Image (tube, helix red, strand yellow):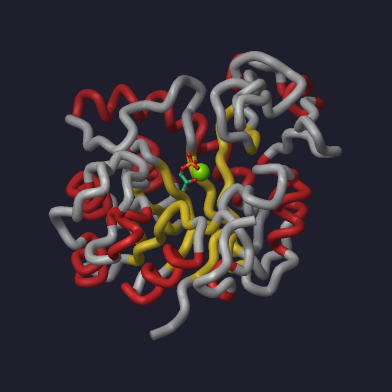
Length: 280
Ligand code: G3P
Ligand code: MG
């Protein structure tokens, strides 16, 4: 069995200021890193910026993320770019800047977070009318993201919790690999992957059947055993399974043994920590 690909979550957010240029460069410099996962959403002028939360102040452990406030997609690009990530020398980067800094040896997993509004129908499959409505929001943003990605020589894998984002990619850039992100509805993830012939599916870590201690409550799951084996189904259909977000060696080891293809990891070196070690 081959070892899973290591996808650095927000640039190994467990040890670096998440989604910053510095995090991406540091994660890319590690031999183990296969891909960098990052979150994109538009600034007020539509420019894709790399940031996770809806609001620039955000919240991590009760503290704000940056020294700016306001909703990302209502904030001018210049303000976002000058937003200082608190406790660091880092600012909030554009997608273009990150892709220009990252060597093509590592790929990027670009998570399409929202198209300039709060996240739309995460983890759900949509009826035709809703899909059409949502596409009108997603298509212009996806177009901007594709422009930036066109300048990157490495591998690009898109993912999103929103079906309409995956649909937009399928229409506008079928040459790129894409993956629905799953929250709690495994069937919806499989259905979306089938509808748009996705290369992969990205379920939360405890959605993988039979992995014992990994099945504590996480994401939309309550900790009970999943009702379907998404790994087996995906593999039967020729799709990869990349699992988010992996934080301990025990999780890593169980998922590796189960045969997942990719681990979206919070920390570097997880696979070699050993059973006695814990997250720093
Ligand atoms: O792409 C996997 C993971 O990043 C999804 O959740 O909230 O960390 O973007 P989140
Ligand atoms: Mg993400």
